[in-house]
Image 1: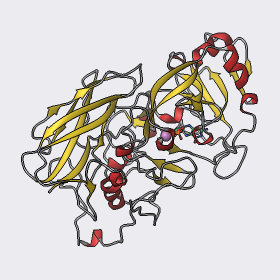
Image 2: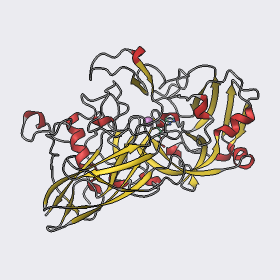
Image 3: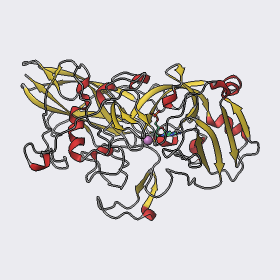
Length: 432
Ligand SMILES: Nc1nc2c(c(=O)[nH]1)N[C@H]1C(S)=C(S)[C@@H](COP(=O)(O)O)O[C@H]1N2
Ligand SMILES: [Mo]
């Protein structure tokens, strides 16, 4: 299948974003063929972003189209959102596997990618700070002295859904593809923290890693986030060394990383070297001002933000994606029904219900939703929808979490760096 490789869509304009969102899934062989050329979304409903009007001056700059990833071991359908640092997302239609294969898993770096560790089992991890006994352990010892567990859990970038914000928010323009669900093998961080013995003053973690700052300055941490001690003690928060049964690849933080499921992916430190327990909130790069923070009192979109009005983003919001058919799929004239597949997840919560619409949200049909395998697993879903006629259809999907929160039509609660964007997923299909 033809790939458009020209151009870099990092910090893409809203125009590029709209276009990419539409074309993003066309790389996958869906049930049918894929429509060539631009087919804009119909966007005249309330809260639906304006489609780029064809032929107007705003649409005049040549559309660059998505840049596809070329990286060893990675699927060529991944879309590059930034090259320095390397960031790539997975089109929704490539998230159609129950367990996301490594080759399809999104990539998010903030700094330079370190060289692959030559002797993974000699890799050292330190746990210090507000603990009774500092721990220094090699990966080899961790594997042999602690009981390993495997869990299938979603990892999702805090900025997932950012491309839905208007005006555009700062940062990588993720559509819904800054997420994946893999089998992670490792030990609960709580097991090490119990061994170290938390002091009563222990309030927060600070995560450190081996990746160099983009500038190459070794004295600057690339990113160093942390979580409340309660989350660190959750048995699902893990130090992991295997992904889908294979040694954790270097690009995903191998030989060893944190997985803090349900929360912004930035807490899941790759190339983990040290966790320092603090007596107060962490203040490393990624913890302050507007990074991984959302507004307490909703702010005017694009307006001036007051840092005092922001709090740390913890659990990610509910989201659902249609993983088959791919956006832009074409079906033979006379096709009477479509089989849909998708996935949904909801940060710390579970998904209670997913609905799909073929008529721009006028009516909804409930899908068949699977239960998660374990906590923090995503929930796959299937549905069969009847097509009233041939023609152009949009399929919309919305999920509702276990506390009753449903995905909105449009990314709301604007904030400068675009967190919490969880507008319902839409795809376009053409029948006949
Ligand atoms: N050391 C380190 N850890 C990191 C990052 C990073 O840049 N450096 N990026 C974080 C962010 S923002 C996300 S979303 C996830 C992405 O993990 P992945 O690249 O394995 O998908 O890793 C997190 N851990
Ligand atoms: Mo992220």
